[in-house]
Length: 144
Image 1 (cartoon, rainbow, N blue to C red):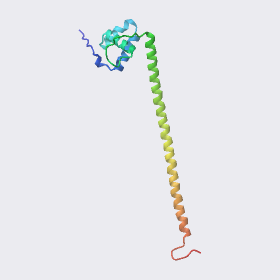
Image 2: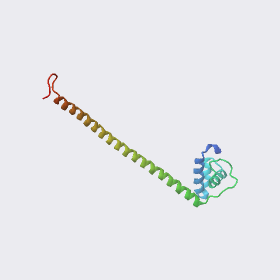
Image 3: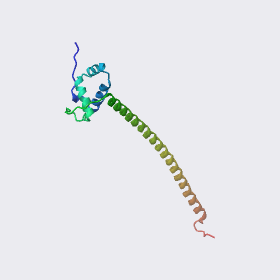
């Protein structure tokens, strides 16, 4: 004999409730009960989450007085928008990584140029010192 443990609402975050509600609403009629059972939840509990989601109240965790309805079209729109958001997040992360690589390479290139210019300035300083020393008469002699 198998035992089914009922999970309480506090065992799920609002994001998890949203995902479960959207997936449940998108399932065909014959599969909804199996899905609820696999999670250890009553179908009525998930339907209340769907109503809360439709009313925009799923984060508050309170029982909804005025329940909304969610059509299959709503589920498809929410799923499409969620996928689009994830795609945009991935694209932005890739663009950010590319920009960081470009910035690092430009910074390394400029550091190399700075080092080259510092060496050139040091060499010029030494050359100027040598030229001044060549033009100075030895101690005790005067310049003609």
